[in-house]
Image 1 (cartoon, rainbow, N blue to C red):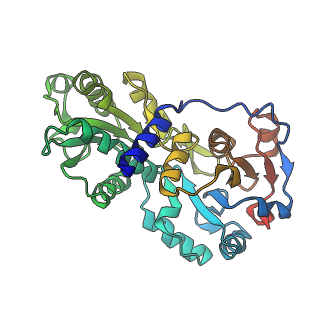
Image 2 (cartoon, rainbow, N blue to C red):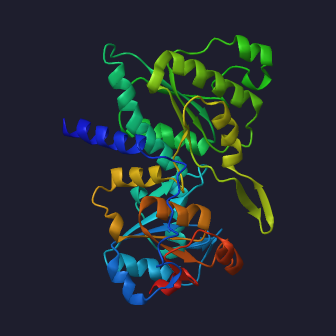
Image 3 (cartoon, one colour):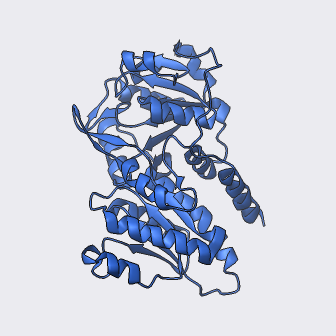
Length: 343
């Protein structure tokens, strides 16, 4: 009963969250303040973005190792975020060990793939409850995404011991999918056990993925009603492929599925508050009033902190310049030259 009540409460919180809403922090005059090193005592949890904050690609930001290890020695809770949905958690744990000599636990790392898998672990029991008349009924997940996202969802299914839950990956599990004509997509018999469409980064992504997602979401909603879900990893519009070179990001791919979906897409990565709800689901004692979000991007990291109701710190070692900060309506609570200035 307690577990069911907790699940219902979390679903209510998620359902009442407008994933596209950014809280207006303009009325708060306590923005862009200088960080005082004594401020560290006011926070129990430090949530860090990774690239541009603790490292730049494969190189540690100067001072990050000392700051992170000191936070550990002070018994602060440390959580790391990334909107990357393609990387395995082991890559992150290995990198933290190599760069910072830190033994970071897997539950301290929330990539958008981890968050997506966590969200599925919340909605799958709800779908199963609607199938209570049939213990052998299946739930299938249409996946448009990478091997890393596939692995995270598969691990979540196994860790939760969900029975009769299967992933149908467009890359591998649909015969001749890459060669299908529009007529064949139109005439294709849909699987009535498909309840969830998940979309993430996939450089093989194309019209067939959009068309199949469109059919499953629209026809699936008629069949399953509110138990048909559209889920996305993150909606970053671009990503830096190399210095000075931007490529289209996951958000540009998700936009096409959002356009054809009859229901709201639940996006699990930054800057959406859903991510913080999922973090709280795994770290129940976390207190938002004692959390500090540290990031380098105004539109993802800082907006995520604002949406979640926590204080924010912008470091200037990543994507944001002084000019961008000055011109943006998004303002962090604190501005620091670097993570090393926290201590």
